[in-house]
Amino acid sequence: MEVIRMKDVKREYAVGDDVVHALRGISFSIQQGEFVTIMGPSGSGKSTCMNMIGCLDRPSSGIVEVGGKATASMSEKELAQLRNKTVGFVFQQYFLLPSMTLLENVMLPLRYAGVDKKERVERAKKALAQVGLTERMNHRPYELSGGQKQRAAIARATVTEPQIILADEPTGALDSATGKAVMDLFRKINASGTTVVIVTHDPRIGESSNRCIRILDGTIQSDTLQEHADV
Picture 1: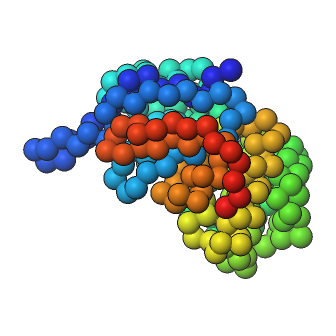
Picture 2 (picture 1 turned 90 degrees about the horizontal axis):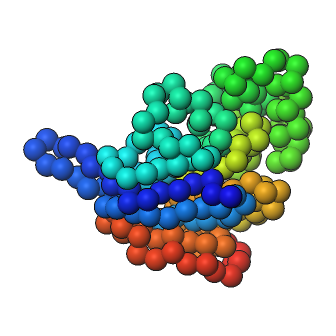
């Protein structure tokens, strides 16, 4: 089943009197359960592509479907609902709220989804256990290492049981050993059937997936199935 579909997607931005062509008619689809990296240098269009998948932006033209739903004509409220139900986000800088414990941070998406408090607590504890942070659940982010923060961010992304995990440079702020552990965690999540899409400029990360889509100047340069390789 297709969980992501892009067909002839273009995205243009007006910058003063100029028009920036961030995406120039890209097309690809991703099936449920795939592990995909989208790779390209700064300015290639990969971040714009990520925003389309994450329902954070809409195309200037073309078709974007996420979870079987076309996003172009959706209202902001509808996009927010689709994001919350379908996509879990992991970012390079974690974006954990410093005033909250890890448990409270992981519970937050469930609160937005209208889940009652008892179930929020149970599901957040389970998500933290799955990333090995049970003993840290009452700590605040400033008390954790970078790797622990990223694992907490992954727990927050998975707690809603989304179809898609979308990660933006998730190992960029980590040392190589910690980055490898994080990538192993993504593989574990993928093995459970969740689609994982990682956006990166790092060739090592790009080559670690089962499929790598390379973007340059807003166009797809290659879309390659590849043997699994460790980071």
